[in-house]
Amino acid sequence: MPVNRETMASAPRTPAMRRDAMAPLLRPEFAHQLLELALSVAHADETELTLQAGSSALTRFANNGIHQNVAETQTTVSIRSVVEGRMARVSTNRLDPASIAETVARAEELARLQAPEPDLLPMPDPQQYPQVARAFASAMLTPEERAEKTEAMIAVARREKLTAAGVVANHRTAQALINSRGLEAYYEETGAEYSVTMQGSDSSGWAKASSTDGARLDFAGGAETAARKARLSAAPIELPPGRYTVILEPAAVLDLLGFLFWDFGGLAILDQRSFLTGRLGTRLFGENIHIHDDVLHPLQSGAPFDGEGMPRQRLKLVEGGVIRSLAYARQTAERMRREHPEIPAAPTGHGFPLPNEYGEAPLNIMMEGGEQTLEELIAGVERGILVTRLWYIREVDAYEKLLTGMTRDGTFLIEKGQLARGLRNFRFNQSMIELLNQVEALGIPTRASGEESFDMVVPPLRAGGFNFTEVTRF
Image (cartoon, rainbow, N blue to C red; front, top):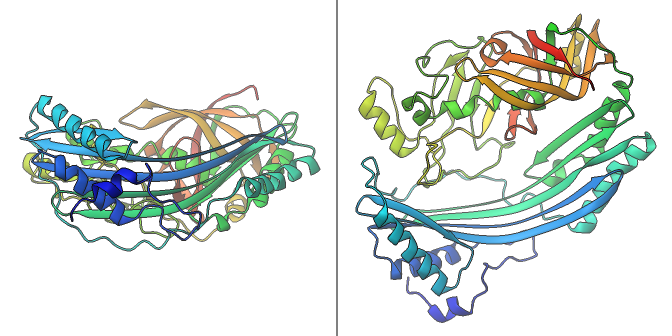
């Protein structure tokens, strides 16, 4: 495709971003024109161009009033150049021809200064990608619309004589990844989320949710949930530390699980920094634990390709408690086959943009559950503790996945299948391996949002012997 330099020179510095919610945020022909421009001045053996465009907006509130509105729109281009087995990447947010040419030149200059990478593979050829039917699911909310949703949450706080704080946010993103071998990958999606904390004089409640379709979010309903937890946990009592039957709501489940999945990358195994080292193919968790990675699930989000443009595959990570699969980038799979031929390895589409030191990781986690509601799980507990969410989680022992942290915004004593009282919060020290061997029941999976990890589709769960080590002062 010939490069029309006059058109490029007069074009705006960001691609056309129409106000119409159904119009593409990033047109493939724009990305392709940028690549052709980059190739016209390139001298590298191979060139890759990644173009990312996005707009996001957020309304923040506290003390029952809005105090911040922010919005951002930006477009960035990243050029990866490969020169004689050496590689470098340079990014810019200036899209005029001179800036693109300068970025290409800098990437090539830096590549020549790097040490050769003996494991570097040629860039991928064209790939086939599955269709993802969630782009344009929600339009960008206007400031007025975000204010309306925020006011609905604040109205709940005023009615219940509580103080509310939180955010209402949404975004729209698009990305294109194309290279000099003919690969072209494009993806666009929208998203929205809210987080709300309701605070009383000695108690608090919390709710958070996100979706690629903002119409699915019940903002006022989330505020009602947070207010109910704040009311029920008023005048909390202190329970001695110890091992208790626990029910973890989905937000608590995902924030704990998030500490596992960086270890499910092939490079983490090769580097012997994964807790799965020496444990592949073994039953590490209970037989009722089934976890997989699936970017195409309707409750998930993200592009159907990875940082090199390889198609993402569905992975059975844990099946019946047995570690079944790892995520592989192309380079990691090649190295694994060479160094450990006994381990079956092939690219799974979970790599990050090169160069990187992380390798790969599964980021679309799905934990299978059962058919019980949260209320039904609670009803099955004679005496135990319900945990709404966790915070300030840190890893104590990387190989045993021993974690420490605290409960927050809704910790309750369960007696005879009912929420009896609010509890002062606990610190915990808990091995994830032990926890996932003590799961007694699983509820209905849902898309959940937390504070310590990325969003997942996970169920609430009931487990025995959860180790609470200390009572906090709040």
